[in-house]
Length: 354
Ligand code: IPM
Ligand code: MG
Image 1 (spheres, rainbow, N blue to C red):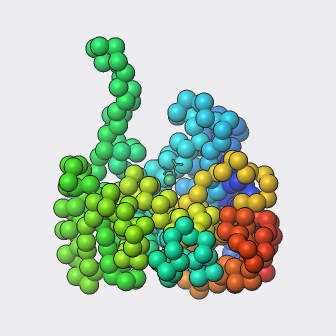
Image 2 (image 1 turned 30 degrees about the vertical axis):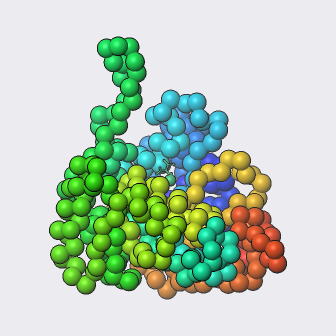
């Protein structure tokens, strides 16, 4: 298992260090794991003047999987856009053709009180958001800021989806649903956007190949509302890049903390990039208070999707659950009656449970 490790910025290095401990524990248990580190984001800019140095993309291409922390920091906010840390993330997703982004939102019974919703609304919640990751208004051309004849500036982006892009991610959605509760809700804005009309048409067509799966369609504004009204109605939510970006942050809050949410970004051959859904949180970087569980759970997803080791994935997830059951909490999920621990101690506890 050749894994490229890209800690990135902010809390990235701290949380990735904890996930690396888990990988090292698995290695001493007999798994053939090879880790190689490289820079991305602001760290890439600092080291090589590029948020995605060539060496990093090459390493990622040669690896079976990528473990990524997070990118971004205040000191990079004034750089020209091509040099910004976020570009490193967008380019590595595109460069590796990681079109299928799996963002599960699951409520651990131990954390039901940490949700911003009433516990009964979220208890037992288990949603899989499948976000298309290499198309849409994120990558569509043309884009830019132009000056009109009257001298006023105008910003513009292009929302684009081709049939093949929609079809391949739809297939992933139905295949995931087959292994779950066999429900796909496709989220779009087909009442307004032409791109969404095509999206809906293609998803409906692909659904015919999966007769066991129940397909529904929902407008994105309604989906945003339903997620906080009755989130348990969803199984797999299939959606485009920008709607998925927004809805996955919203869904994270149902679970108590975005610090708990892992993600997998897969290409057509299950090569994957694994990262927490949260960002680099520069305000708490270096303080040993960040929650490493989303990154550790991303390693579990890596074992499941890239290496087809469901057994190890479940072992890691069980170790996380056991650690929560013991009452250990980082600051983001702390509540009275539990024990507040730092990033390092949380990672060590999961390794011990493993
Ligand atoms: C995410 C992030 C990124 C995105 C940013 C950092 C470019 O918000 O992974 O959800 O918008 O995809
Ligand atoms: Mg986001």
